[in-house]
Image (cartoon, rainbow, N blue to C red):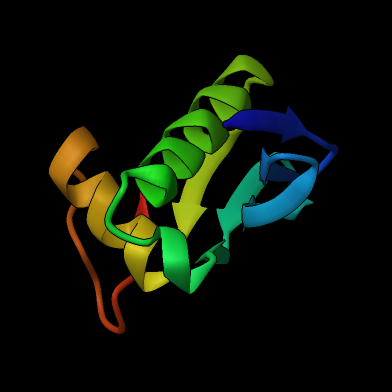
Length: 93
C-alpha cells in the first residue's frame, strides 16, 4: 500500500488504483478531517486508521489544529489522542 499526501487529502493507492482517502480542508490554521473512505473490499485491514494517523501527523507537522467531523476520525482521535467527543461525534485536539 502506498500513501500519497496532497494539499488537503491523503490517498491510499494499491496497484496504481486509489482505494481510500482522508480529506482535511483548512481554514485559519484549523484542519477539519471531514471524510474518510476505504474501498469495501479492503475494510477491516487498518487502512482507515493509517489514513487518519497520517493526516493528524501531517496537520501537526504543518503547525495546524486538528478537528474531526467525520465520525470515524472523531472516534479515532478519542481513542488515540484522548479528545472528548461532542455531539454529533466531533472532536478537536
